[in-house]
Image (cartoon, rainbow, N blue to C red):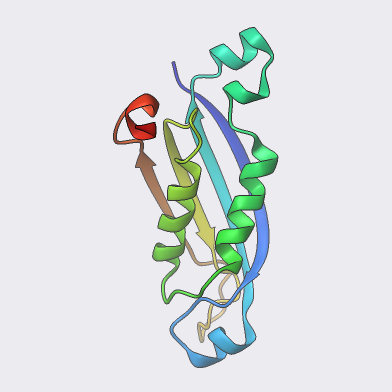
Length: 128
């Protein structure tokens, strides 16, 4: 069974981009994360340790946005997905990185990349 925890609109300032002014000035990035998991054990036990703590996850997303700059939002999305999959209960994730202040010369609302990544092994195998 797969259930989903969603974080929508996590916002932080990062210095990602290919242009010098993006690196120097920074800009806001907005991230949506969906985490697939089996919530049965957590709901049966009412134990936070059996699920993904979304408060901790939100802090990790912000940390990934704020850490060392990368050129591409694709790379940022991969880093965030990797952080999500460190949670024992996470089976898969879908990460969307929005760059609403992208340096585009025509009117636009948003630029984003969405990636989907799955755990490659079982949680027990990955902890070994």
